[in-house]
Amino acid sequence: MRIAQYTPERITDRFMIQDLMYRWCRAVDRLDRQAMLDIFWPGAIDSHGPYIGRAEGLVDWILVRHKPIKISSHFVGNLLIEFATPDLALMETYVRTIQQYPPDGKQSLAQLTGGAAGDPDSAMDMFTSSRYLDHVERRDGQWRVARRDLIQDWKQIVDVKYQALQPHEGWIIGQRDGNDLLEQARRNLGLA
Image (cartoon, rainbow, N blue to C red; front, side, top):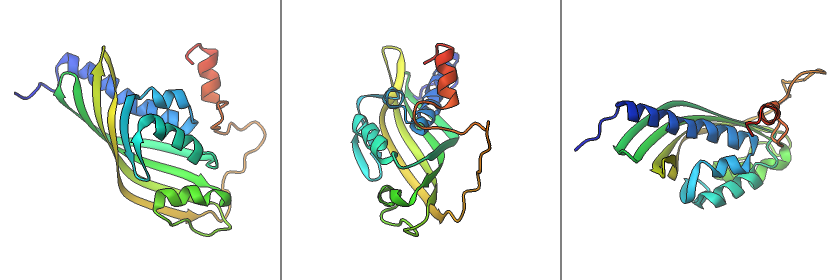
C-alpha cells in the first residue's frame, strides 16, 4: 500500500527533511565539522565521487580537501521527497556548486574532475551541476541521512584571469574559518 504523501504529518516531515539539506549546504560552505556530521546517521554511507565510505570519513576528507578553497557556495534548487514509509524517505536534490581554487590547490581540484585542473599558474573557478540522492530515515523522532549518492551531471573549470571582487574597508567578506558574520551572529544569539 502506498503511503499518503501530503498529510499534515508528512508536511511537517518534509520541512524537517528539507532543513537537512539547507543545513548541509551551510555546514560544508562554512567548514563546520560538527554541523556536517549532524546531517548523517552514524555509519551512514556517502558515495561522493572520489570518496566512497562512511560519512564521518567524508567530513574529514572535505575538511582536508577544502583547506585551499577560499570560496565555496552550494546552492540547492529542485528538491523532491517521496515517503516509502512514515520513517523512510527518498530525497533528490539538485545542487549547483561554485568553488575557487588557488594555483596551489590544483591537486584538490583534480580529485573532483578526474584529472583536469586548468592552467597551473592561475586560480580556477569550478562550477558543477549535480544531484544528491539521499535515503533519509527517522529514528527516535529525528530525521537524518542514512545514505547519500552524489550524481554528477556536469562540471566546468575556468581560469581566473583577475579577481573581480576587490573589497574596500568595511565590506563584509565570507569566511570559512569559524569567523563568518553568520557564525558570529549565531553565537551572539545563543544559536551556536
